[in-house]
Length: 285
Image 1 (cartoon, one colour):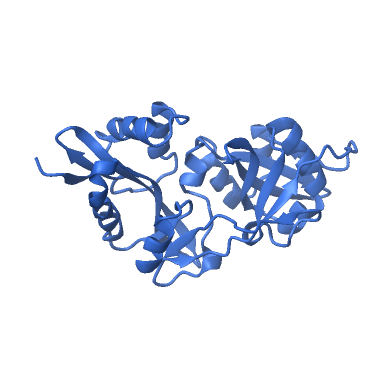
Image 2 (cartoon, helix red, strand yellow):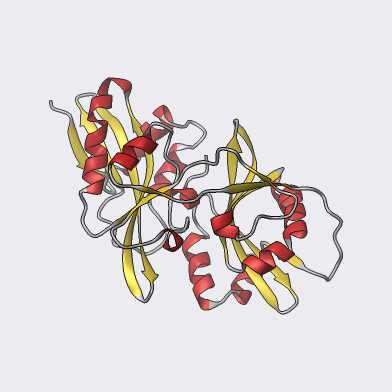
């Protein structure tokens, strides 16, 4: 039987999840892989990516996360490229998966966690780099002053405070496997923060900021936020890309080699690309 490329539909989700758990990352359970593919936000997705099928069963998987975003008053269709794993003896079929994904018309493509050897391949296929200059902020147990500010992860308080557009983001991501949500309140203003826990050198002690609704308030509450991330989430440091948080946080260290992120679009600019509605929100590794 020839090696076939097939779309991952609801019928193939379990097989794809078992393959990724066994061959890519055993820290992510089969149920977690399957749940990540079935995104909680509303979208008319054509598939969940593509797989390679041989006599022995699934031998390769390339996940995709689809979304529709409103940008400058018009709907834009996104395809976020996710986990990509092919058994060594079938690696020469790997590009067939990528080409099937990119052959889908009408999508802007993002790759927000490309491995080292995928980066030059993406570049040859017309992907552009996002500026991922990243500050590492040590999360220290700064003293807190009651009543001056509030850092909350309480769902009821978050939903009661957010604006309609922020609330839509929250509702779309609250059931994802990796996104965590915080509300920062100071005076009469608030900042909605979405972050994930990340690994560096196999240490799961980093908080990566995915979204910030108010950069100025985020900077103003940097110390109470650092304390909260340390004490409540066990994050020893925060990874803050400047394109997400704005200015470099005080007391931070700029990473020498931040992880690359890429996109491919015929009309969108880097400032119109964010990290929501993606694998970064759905898969906790």
